[in-house]
Length: 137
Image (cartoon, rainbow, N blue to C red):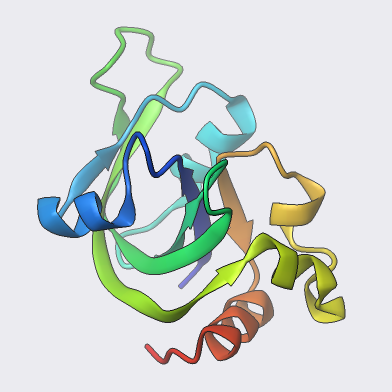
């Protein structure tokens, strides 16, 4: 199993809306590195759901429900989408500020590739974030 982080501005699509929807298509990604990450996702992989711009914190855990397919928002075959489902809300959100001050997370893509909307997360990073959030899978 691999781990990922997906970003969404809460004013556009929040964790609460995601939970209400029960599943969503993660589409509209127009960055090649992010697209390649979507392509690498496998059904059952876990993802952190990150509120970007407003909040700037990891708020929940989701899972890949359907692997990469043609993005339905465009006819350009270069772009992909995946379907994701919420798993659970974190007991305590983990802020970007917390992540930046934790020496164990200094190489996390969220810091190194801060503008990338779909990013890999290592096993170690995933477990550290869970501990910071007081959450278990």
